[in-house]
Image: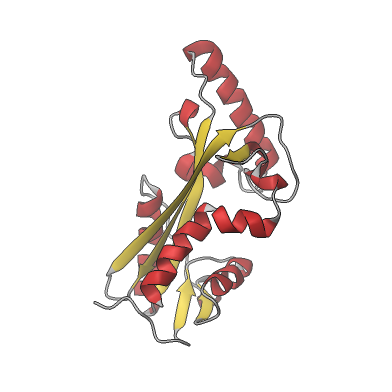
Length: 203
């Protein structure tokens, strides 16, 4: 089936965050009318899959099949080699219901220290992943994945980003995501890479 959507078509962003819908609309160059699952009264499904791709597809299919409209969902997070890929798909959960990423970064620092001292795991390698899925009401879904590799740094540096940005330094740079100009970060981010693939397929 063709993946291309008619310009101006309605597209559900499988989120209850209006700001995210605005961001998605901008990423799609304003070609579609992006509405949120929350604005339609759709419940958020439990994220029961074990991968970013699985969760993105699950959320997109749930929204599309519930509302009868093409839907877009994403799942993203930070994976750390020394922590066997954690926090991974649980990146948001580590910050808790109040989205306390300061606390989450303290937990990461503690866990990495324990892994180093008890298991000899000294790797600082880490990567951000973003999986984007587009789903149709009949259940068909496609997925695009972006990844940016780097290393974990402590103490935290920078205040321009959000989430785990202050402890992530992308490969090829000597500054963290949180020290970068937002436009510069957006050009190399995992979300940008995933959306580039999505735009190529939809436009």
